[in-house]
Length: 273
Length: 246
Image 1 (cartoon, rainbow over the protein chains, first blue to last red):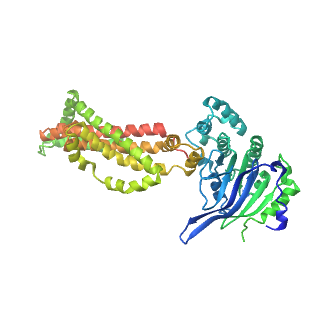
Image 2: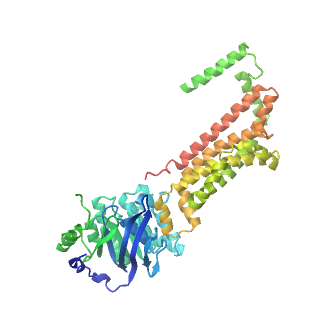
């Protein structure tokens, strides 16, 4: 990072002064390989504040999904430490809900839309007589009110991903970890879901970590964009995004700053030579 | 209908050969004699009584064996450690022919249901165990991680995630085991246990009633076929729409 990039590291006003929710300190993960060991990610340090929306971009195989899994507690780092609300992350938690990229495998195909959300509610502490109202609210929030009794296979890809998001929201998590959630969706569905996620994040005050390989998506959604480089996966740049909210698919993307961020981040992504 | 031409001609030929008395044998019977003997055994109740004994043995053994097989399979599939530790034991015990246990079972239980049921149960443990264990391992990683993320306990994980996901495989395992249970039940009756259809078959043979013997043989085949057809039917009814394209 040079001085010019560093000057961009001002935090957006929306999250200034809030406490650090997630702290990643020199985290690395290596796995045994045929020759010695293979380093997947290395020396990752990042603080995420409460209510912040952080996008992580990088080419395929750069370890961004691995980083998300480490934060989720699905894997343990082999070096460094991840702390969440001051406590070390050593297992998955309802406070850090993961939205998986492959919604077809993350939903319970034998349960309806309502049934899938109930799975999350039943495992929580809320009294069962409040479930019906909560489910109504969540379905409304993600726009699935008309599909309550359908099974996942009867839903479009976008609707299935909405359902997965609703199930995560049912946990009332402090942090939402999204792993390329819109990677398999068509462009129009994708834009709609981007706006919905931005709106949900604002409504709930949730902290969001959003992984994508799409620079524009990262800028459009993020308060900050973290760019990662490959082999081993490392943070190559962190860029603050100072764009007004609510953002708009047309005007935000045409904003001169948006284009500048895009230009800036483009340098950090791998290109075919 | 055309498929019936061959078997019907064979039966007709068999009947004709029997009537012309070209072949003389104590063990040969004409299809008409077999039909009459079968009818007699059915009407005097002996066949149905033997059937109930065999079915009781097969069913009780099937239930016990698959309960054990499914439980162990789920355990070995869910816990890597248990799966690894059990590997050798399973591979040592599984190839033991279940009928080789007849002498032991006879010592422990004596003649009667206990012996038959225990051997059938032993035979049913293995297919259900192996199918269940493999199915549990095939549960999508994402689903298991969703369960971890929801902080589900082991019971919720098993009953809300794993078992529903493998229900179709469990039914296949059950169907396999059901076929085995009938075979083993009859085998035990033929070789040792004075009960059921297998024993009736042996008695008919030893008392030189070939027609009755063939009648029981055909009846056993019919039960086996009905059992499998019924389970297949039930499977497609219950789970025809259960398979989900990923």
